[in-house]
Length: 323
Image (cartoon, rainbow, N blue to C red):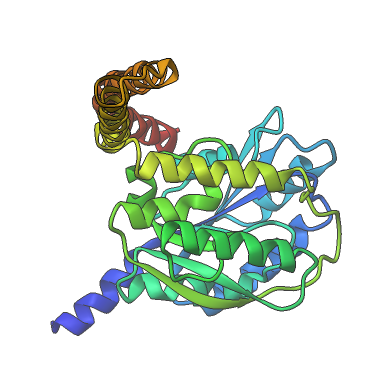
């Protein structure tokens, strides 16, 4: 058997787990499954569909249970409360049996027929594929500003971080997603050295239900962006950052001290504010070094806890899949 044939057979053996968080989407569930099933029947690949009801207050869960009885490849999980998209995805990851995960919303603004297009770069060697929204939508200005800031801060070349995504299961197991950090999955993956590709995905109008977007998400997104950047840079080598600030402060203290000595012994005039400034800068410098040393200890502890977390997550995923 040639390597080419073996590669094709290996690709066909991969299960693609499409994880669909849903909150108050009762009017979209059945149509989503109908379109998904049409896609599955045309595709040579093996799929499973994992619905996560994230604390819906309508009949979303009843609709999910109905379609689960109709389609054998559907799994379902339910949150008693709305925990947010990141926790919904985590529940989906834990339930998924696939080697490749796909995040797809239930609102049908993205059609299931485009899932194979989103997944294909994974089979060509990419670790993560992110969709690039094509079409008109109300949040376009906010989204474009957010993505421009993200590209600048994180040095990414992708156009859209807040869209549908496909990724190898190993990527999710290698990164830690805090609340609302799902939108930075691509950033965190790149930081771990994974290869990211991008494909154009059409965006459609909502046919049923209301958007979950609110203006209050903008400041949360910006602050999360800074938090992720801090995790990726500052907390890797905290002593380097705080030590540099401390050295600059101590260096300024020495310069100001020399000026104070010049005033005192050359001009024979004392200038007490300079002495206070020397004391202040020296204190700041020493404090920065102390913070740096303490942060180094915390960073080492964080790395050890991350290794423990990965082991626990691996055991938890095995137990969930057995159940």
